[in-house]
Amino acid sequence: MGFKKFSNLIMIEQTLFALPFAYIGILFADGPKNKSLSIWIFATIALVAARTAGMSFNRVIDANIDAKNPRTKDRAIPKGEATKTEVLIIGIVSSLALVISSYLLNPLCFYLSFVAVFLLFTYSYFKRFSSSSHFYLGLVEAAAPIGGYLAVTGKFSIVPFILGSAILLWIAGLDIVYALLDKDFDKKENLHSLPSSYGEKKALRISIACYILSVGSMIATGLITGKSIPYWIAIASIAFVFTYQQIITRNRDLEPALKKFFKANMYVSPFLLIGTFIDVFF
Image (cartoon, helix red, strand yellow):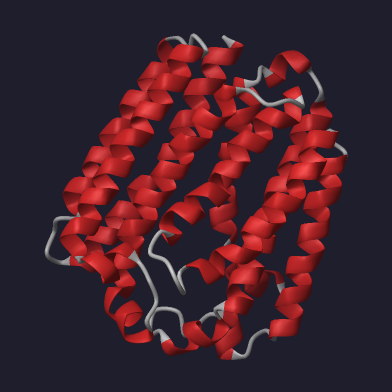
């Protein structure tokens, strides 16, 4: 499998999008003061490995569903560009890389890496029986900032979990909107999502609530850790992006509106990372 096909298989741009999650966790734990480059390196490896494992498992588990869905029928396995066995091997190897890199961070991260692998593998099954799958995905993504924080401290505290809840709610709200694209298909295939189970209007209301609570969690984390002006500017910018996203989802022409929605979403994690970085370093 060539790099281009591999990149398309695991959607490498989403891995780059998720990397700031782990770095934010490190920054909140005063990672720079620790001055250990190994933490940044192994946290990066763990995040990349986790994303690769999660996407690989998803592609294998959902291969038959993807083949039926007009939106996903051109993915690697349905098109015959990769076999389930090949992609499963990538997922297993990536899971091992996650566990090993976590072991090299500290014992707590090592033990929790097995929980992470379980979440990555089971997420794809969740939508087969519950419309809360959006929140399960959010939980998977929330592991990144929590893991980044624990990579530095090696012990639990309330801060990473409030920060993680901000990511969980944001990703859940995002995924609810994303599920609008497959609303009719999900109904037909008896797959569960909030749009297919409760309708578009109710789903969008829940998405709004998720975004509001996400910003609230970001504010709470900033207050608890005594963040300064750069961080608050970042939160204000994120709130603006969230508001813009929710406004454009009301557009009757949904597909182009969602393209704008996801384009705007790419700014959220950089805003949060940059604001936190400036606050910690300067």
